[in-house]
Length: 314
Ligand code: AVI
Image (cartoon, rainbow, N blue to C red; front, side, top):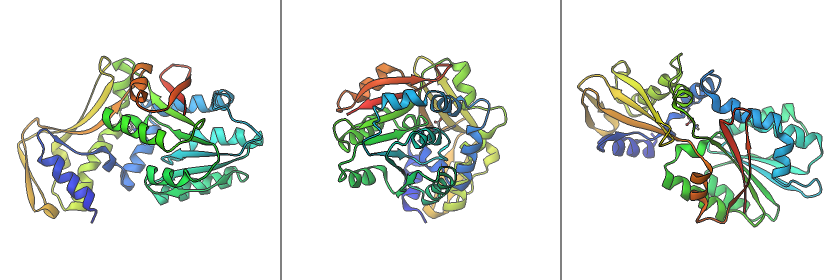
């Protein structure tokens, strides 16, 4: 049994208000549901960033100041399925850039699949996967003298709290050398009528993604959540620029978690916070960067200006 999961569930459900951590969405079923989310018409984020990678590849290369005569490491934090990155890899390969692609992920399974697909589609691209925690792996990579380009895509930073995000960028900065670059993909603050449907799709996939967390607690920790008595509730205001997801109990009920030997009470209408998805503008990003040695040197946006790939220089 996963002890961190057990302790985090205990802490979150014992708190007032209750919460669960969004990193636990991603079991096998959650991974598959997230792929479905990325293909939904309402989830504009993936298409917007793909648009940048596909249609502005040369601008990315220029902004990253890549040089054909200098070997570099292209390090991606969080492997994903590589769809966006492959657009960049394709051009770098065709134009004979000298680089090694290094995807880092906690899931060896995700890395194996990614490596297989890159090997098949782009057999000339050297791919070295690294399994583990981002910062442990980055620390180990610090030994090498080669220039580094870090890709952190998909607005994944937005799932951290502001304090955690600042800390993340400061650790990232510490693990780089002068002139290394970061390509940071962030969803931009925009109106509610565009953002909210991305977290409340008409097919109910995001609802299943959110409620899957309760199934996971049932399956892995022996709980008895009845998912029919909870609903998915997303929220967003443009003023704040943060989408939040909740699971709401539709009735007064008790839920027992066997592995904890505990019962938790849920009142009718009580909310459990499950996810934060922050949206950004230049001011917010710059405020995160103020205590790091990273600075924004360029910003590429999709044709709708929904999403930005910021280029940071150390
Ligand atoms: C992975 N992350 C950036 C997604 C997001 O938009 O916050 C996760 C997600 N949650 C609901 N839909 C997508």
